[in-house]
Each structure stands twice: as structure tokens, then as C-alpha cells.
Image: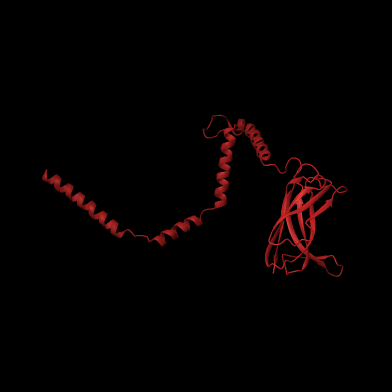
Amino acid sequence: MNKNILILSVIILTVAIFAIIGAAVQPQLSLDEQNIIVDSVIQTINPQALADSIGATVEARVLTKIGLIPDTSVPTATAPSATLPVLSATVGIAENLIASVTPESYQGLHAKFVNSYAYTEGGDNGNQKTFETEYTPNTLFTFDVVFENDGTVNWPPQVEMRNTGSVSTYTGHRPNVIVDTSNNPVKPGDRLGFSISAHGSEELGWHTFYFQLYDAVSGVPIPGGYGYFSYLAK
């Protein structure tokens, strides 16, 4: 009995000694050292690849839930050659479904803002354009605002671009511009630019003008037809 107690005591003492040594030898990291390690791990992560992977996984699960893609989580005894035509057909259906959810164009009348830019005209022929984003006070220039017909019907025969507001002072020489498209219809996929003369403001800093497209005859706004132009007065 005493011998067993002695052996047990020796074992407990040995384990305690190793535990104390381990605790003494184990390095203690400071908060800065821990942050360095965490940052180095984060830098090895590819956020785009992670987002793509998550998106693909969610999409596959949704399509599986609605029955457009067979559930492959449990292997089946069906020969691969027999399932290939079915899988090909379901992939085609899935692609059509995704395309219908994210259409390339809007149904009916619609417009989208493409870009805007400013320029001055001159040179030997008087029509050479110099594009700038900065203008000194009272310097004359022209700016164009470009829209695209991303709907499924032609735009109205007369389209108006109307100034609807601005950040700081609006220095355009007119509040709107009307383009007659009767002889050159703006078809789906076509683009149209609207030009307005302006001058650099005496209020230095950035200026932004906002615009909306309208059917010039009925006065009804064209859906999606809102855009802007910005320049720096200095």
C-alpha cells in the first residue's frame, strides 16, 4: 500500500514539474506581436476569390433547391454517361434563369447615364477640342452629358435634358437643351450627348450640375435618365 502511494506521489510530482517547466518556457506574446500575426494571416486571404466562392456556393444551393440542378451531395449508382445529358440541359436552364434575373436592358422606355466631360474649342480650324476638368473663373467652356438608350423602344422624337439642381453655383448658360431625334431616332443601344455652354465659377472649388431627361413634348421624365457633370473652379 505504502509502495503504491509512493509511486503515485512520484508520478504526480513529475507531472507537476513538467507543467511548471512548460509554463516557464512557453513564450508570452505581446499585443503588438499578436496583431502582427493576425495581420499576416489576413494578408494571405484573397477577398475576391472568397466572395466568388461564396457566391457560387449560394447560387448552386438555390438552383438545387428549386430543382434546376440535381443534388450531388449523396452519390448515386447511376452511370456518369447516363447523367451527362440531363446535367447539360439543367445547366442551360440555369443560365437562362440567371439571364432573366439580370437582364441586359430594361423593358420599354429607359435611359442610363454614361459619362460627362468639358472642353474648349479652338485651334487653326476653330473646332479643335481641348478637354479639361479645371477652369479659372469666367473661362468659357462647353460640357457634354451622354446617355444611352438601354430600353427596348426608341426614345421620343424630342428629348430634353433639364438641369434639376447643383452643388454650389450653376454656371450653365441655359437651364435645358432639347435635341430633335425625328430624323435620327435613338434606338436601343444608341447613345446621345447633350451640350451646354458654361463658364468657370468665381466660387472656387468643385461644382456639380444634375440633370434629368424628359420627353420634350409630354414633359414626362424618361426612367433612369438622370446624370451629372462636375468640374473644378480654381
